[in-house]
Image 1 (cartoon, rainbow, N blue to C red):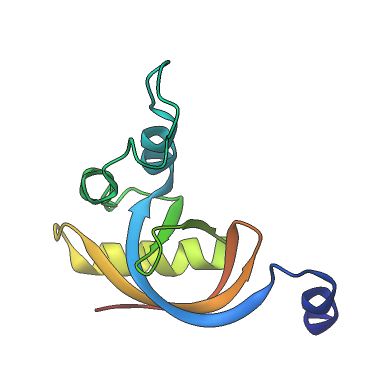
Image 2 (image 1 turned 90 degrees about the vertical axis):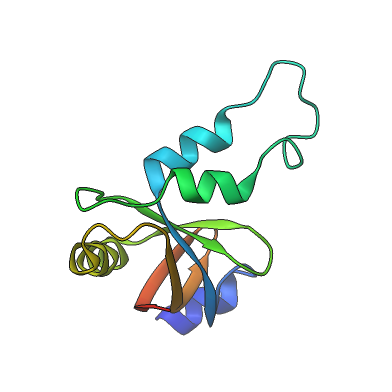
Length: 118
């Protein structure tokens, strides 16, 4: 069934990526935080600062993955959120989560197979 859905959708593909794990609510808020006169929103953001500022904490429940290669962000599915939450809880007060994530991208979300801290 998944293969059929992937064949029907040009944006569905499996893979393994490296990048940052962030608090999804915080990161979305920062991405929407633009001035009224900003015309090029992709250049009006400091992605590095946003990633550091939105580093997940033990109480984070909704995560996003920011792909290292192009800075594109993806929401995690419910299983991915559970796996990411476990990783963050085990890390304690560590800040900044660089991870290797494998799964299947569909649109702006990832169906996560695994997430491993780097």
